[in-house]
Image 1 (cartoon, rainbow, N blue to C red):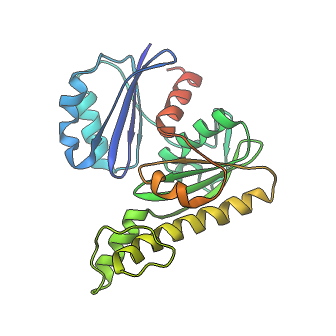
Image 2: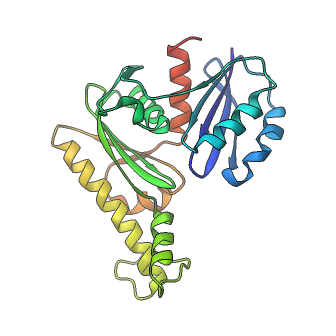
Length: 242
């Protein structure tokens, strides 16, 4: 069975075609060019099943549906469940959890089978805690590294956004805003890691476009895992046949 897996995030759409357990083709498109999805998808082999995680809003959902309309197969937009693929969801309203976070948690659990902090460093930074029993305990959402810098530049008249570098003690404004954004992110990850570690051994999984900026300053045992959402979608598809 050929599957098309789509991860529509806040900034980019990623997709992969999968046949069996093997990934066949993978690509990415910035959301600002989402109108070109139909052209991009027209080059793909016809899938038998389409699973989508979409956190980019209703307009993106319509664009994705239109781009997939030529194929005669149902489109499944994933929604977080109370329990799925071995992961239990402790959110007060399980369906309110973002589908991307849910798919990433499922992928993390199937990879680690252990307590872990699942961190995605994207437009927003999310930090989600999994217990040793596969229960999603809860998580944090904060602005991503780039968003922090943009918000400072937009909210403070004398702080102009410019490319900065990390410094322990910055001596120019660009370095100060970049380093501050990194330190805020790293500090939040460490605090969540320490809180989860009070329950026992814990691992940290890092993904997302800004993971490289963060990981070198984290000073925690961490593993870089790309495309957790796509991996989670594949697991969901395999464990819930259409």
